[in-house]
Length: 353
Length: 138
Ligand SMILES: [Zn+2]
View 1 (cartoon, chains in turn cyan, green):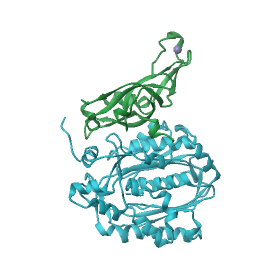
View 2 (cartoon, each protein chain N blue to C red):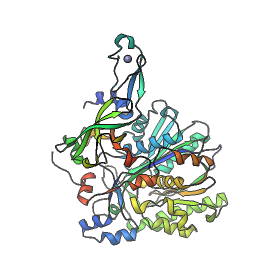
View 3 (cartoon, helix red, strand yellow):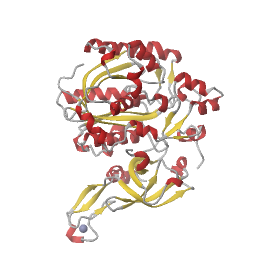
View 4 (spheres, each protein chain N blue to C red):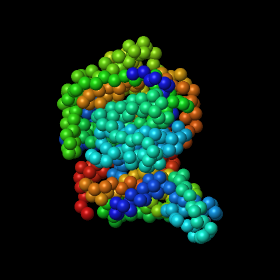
């Protein structure tokens, strides 16, 4: 899908809650060797939201910073889409609360997206369509999650919290989005039924026929469309449910570890689901230079992938003086907590009144 | 808190929107209909003013016996913040230990959950404050 008119990123920012818990700490509670599991998953710690944080607050903070970078006001936003699998309400849009908190409402459109871990990149594509068709000037695409695994489940070692927001527009671009392409199938690798607190997953089935098949097919199609080789890109960002999958996918596709490095955040913050690729891209843009070419491929269970070919412009230099912290600065502000504090924060245990 | 009252106050709670008296230039938060200094002179001259969101700690205290809604956050720090515009607000300090707080500490507003009616009920959001030295640009 090639945009009709020029479209790209005018501002971006990531936000990750400051609390961390280690796989070792989680494993100790469940009688597992968490340290070895963490090594296998290449996850050293995962982020944990404070009890007063959720997808609304994470999205709002990231969006506020992204707007500061884009130098636009709430009233300049004509669309806001929030992608998440942990929206605070089952019915009542996250996007309306975020829009109010940015003073973007009421003359604008807003909606929530759900597509497991790729709901954020789905929001990108919608904003791209609205901007490049000339229907709107500026749209906000957000991917954020505060995901949970059932206590003791394999997912508990990685399910984390964080998000990133992007102002998508057509002028003053920091980076142009040259092309996007998707790959979508009906694959039952991970799901959560209405009313259930924790998701179910297909165990080993989540790898080959799910993550790898979609990431590989989508990325290969993008390379075919753009006529580029992996080495033509300066950086690549792939969805990162753990530290192993994106490295393996990159290797199979012909990308190097160095190309992945700046955007590979999972080792320190865990899997931020819909926030993962948007945060990885934000961390990569923090380090990018004018003329850099970035390839991005998300993955969402159920299942699908979205790829983007992104070209950084000279405007990226201006970001270095912006008052907004880089993703690295945000992540470096951290505090480790015990499993019991984590369980209280995530309401896995309830105190009396 | 009643839903209608919360809903009416959304603009001030989410965005820190107060008013400026266009007669004398004084900023008020929460918003007022008339300026207590200018009285009749300020009639129809009170305009929306969005606080920048930064300020400093004037006084603070550690809360050990929290309101039931905040029990998961206990112990937490409440502070009186003087915003850059001069208005003073009371708010939670987040992502900081009591021992790290000091008078004059620079803080910035960030939206958080203030509470909820019940697990089935409405969630209330609004501004709390975090230290700028750990949450800002290095
Ligand atoms: Zn006055």
